[in-house]
Image 1 (cartoon, protein in one colour):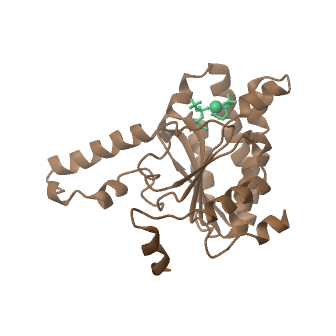
Image 2 (cartoon, rainbow, N blue to C red):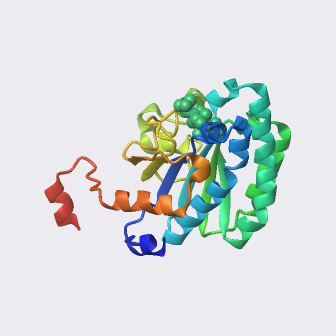
Length: 250
Ligand code: IPE
Ligand code: IPE
Ligand code: MG
């Protein structure tokens, strides 16, 4: 694995990695266990992904932990996920401090159970001065809901004469998204073999490189992250320009 790390060009790492952590249910089912067993075994993968991202100097990592659509799962599973969120945040706090991890959240946080909101607020406050990496949890997050929310807030400003319609541009829209304090996503990883976006960071991933792996989330380790990064580094991000232009820019 050190060999994998050594083959990564540290000058060319994604600044912001976003991960759709998928496959917990199937992982558990493969072992003849209930779905919740998979969620319980997802924490090691979270630790590894964040540590791996830190190792290479990535400054932002965003993890899709619970979508707006996930509220439609059986109540038993939703309740278990919320409980796990609270216990995991508490359990990891000392690790966050030790490793300089700043916690952030995006999504309709007010829809989470009060206890989860409280723990999350406490962990965000306690880690606010950490500077190694920002770890954002997408919770009760849906990109369409985020955009609707932004449009409402921008409209209010226009109606109240606090914003001129002609001033609305990409920057203003950015500033009204849950991710106002985060840079665009450079690299998106999805585990478990599914190849879709599932309402994650639609605006922010406009020019992200996408990577799909069959590994189920509870099995995800640093080496899988490093494989993904090596793949990323073999791509050419052109942003609409020609390959020749990109070469002369460098
Ligand atoms: C991802 O794993 C975790 C959440 C969506 C909360 P899943 O629970 O979606 O696992 P699969 O896709 O059913 O295997
Ligand atoms: C997406 O996973 C949401 C999270 C990882 C939290 P899902 O497993 O819910 O996605 P779909 O519904 O299969 O696309
Ligand atoms: Mg899934």
